[in-house]
Amino acid sequence: MLRSLVSILLLTSLTLWSDGAPLSAAPKNVLIVVNDDQGQQAGCYGDRQAKTPHLDALAADGTRFDLAFCTSASCSPSRSVILSGLYGHASGQYGLAHADHNFHTRPFVVGLPNLLQAAGYRTLLAGKHHVIPESQFAFEKNANAKLNLRSTVELAERVEAFLKEPDERPFFIYYCPIDPHRAAQGYGNDKRYPGVTEVEYDPAQIAVPAWLPDLPETRADLAGFYQAIARADQGLGRVIQALKATGHYEDTLILCLADNGPPFPGAKTTLYEPGVRLPLVVRSPEQQTRGVISQSLVSWVDLTPTVLAWTGAKPPKYPLSGRSILPLLEGQAVEGWDHVFFSHSFHEVTMYYPMRGIRTRKYKCLRNLAHPLSFPFASDLWQSPTWQTTLQKSLTKYGQREVSAYLHRPAVELYDLEADPGETRNLAGQVEYSEVEAELLGRIEQWQRTTGDPWVVKYTHE
Image 1 (cartoon, one colour):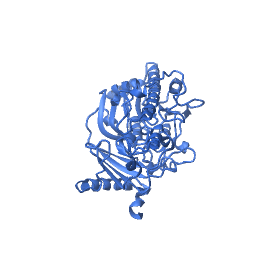
Image 2 (cartoon, helix red, strand yellow):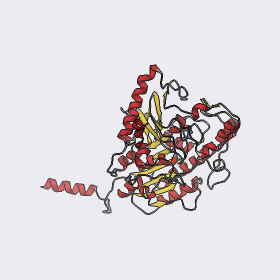
Image 3 (cartoon, helix red, strand yellow):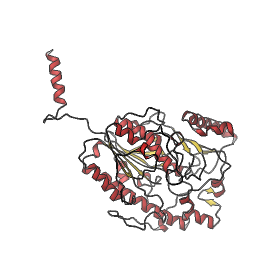
Image 4 (cartoon, helix red, strand yellow):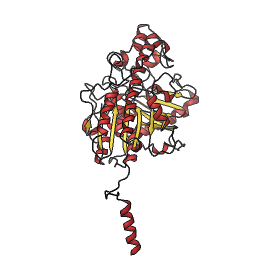
């Protein structure tokens, strides 16, 4: 009896501060940073012309995923995946949410901010939202009022103001600048933004990636793109500074990524590597190893499960498509992280081109479910100087790819990524790859059925 009483008193003393206030476990805060239309154009990914010192520093203090992928290279579908843990064909966010496009998430979906608010979190949207209905991805506070979302430092300062509020609840911050998305004229580089030091590039010194044509217009286009990337990185640096200044750097899980690849034909809206292979840098206060480079294949469907696992918040009542990447942060090889799936249906409402695919370490297999159609163009990509010059000069090649092959695609594409990283030699239909093709197509169909893809009708109706 005496021993029991001592135990009770000891437990009581361990759960009280010296002033009698209850002790609580360290808060499990979350910051998700989503840049708009950026691939692996960052110093920590080996891009020597990108000025991203703040992302690079975070990678050195956390884990950089080399093989991280969005599931759809389009803004709204990708952001719905990030905030729901469901593929776009499962959530119903098939294409862009805004204006005439008007694609909606299905009513059953409960978004990540709603799940975290139910778990007692205060939540902040700072930047681009771009999913509807907003009530299904509802943030308690919005930092965007009367602010140009390319003004990344000002946006970050509003994040700091939120952090300084006298509120003891744990927080979820969703920080999403518009950079480096295209603007009506260039990338918004014609303006100046408070607190931002613009980093300008000489187009003649720009290194053009192999998937783009090396044209003067492309070089100038890329120079503007990299300038916007540098502006986005300065905003990230200001957010990290705010976390440190408020004492939250060591209790916050930080995930930095992009929604889809660069705003050029050949990347955004495609399932080729430049469109879907993206940056993902994660920094957990609890990881024991820093500067990790993970070779696990991870997908944006894994992000909501990761946050739920970190916070302990209850998942929705329906199954999610992904799983937590927290066990991967120390860098050890973990069995089973060796493939990802892709699901793209629309970008703009006029851009119907459903594609499904799988990517393993060696192969990528794409099924173009409406392959008799010409591949459509997002309006901003069509208007880009890079594509317009390709048209005006009647060029037959666009980077490594034939223009005709880009516009007119077969039912199935199969690439050996080890031998053909540019994805230009389609192996589908070749006898020596027939078993690989059949296996991967079978896995795609099974995954479609398992995840409730309406496009499985194509297997029986057409």
